[in-house]
Amino acid sequence: FVEKLRSIYQRARARDYYDIYRLLQQETFEDATIATALHDKAQAHDVDLDLANGIPQDDIDAVQAYWDQALDRLVTNHIPFDDVVKTVDTYLQNLA
Image 1: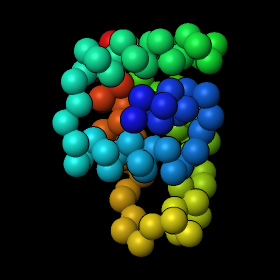
Image 2: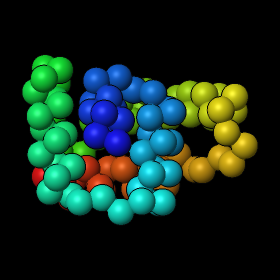
Image 3: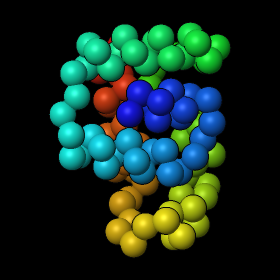
């Protein structure tokens, strides 16, 4: 889960956003543990984290541009992009 969170700050992939959203709907995570692990992972991969500001707008725009196309071949149950981004973004900001 932490690796998925880290990856959205390093590359913009629809599948990562979708997976994080589904995990947040199905599982309960210890936020303090996740935040610490996420900072450690980001540092190890030389990734800048700005959790207080959530997902960078450029990344949101990049994923939104191909959201439906990317998920068509992966899932049958499409979740609206705005719902996914809002959920993931709120979670990340709460980790700050």
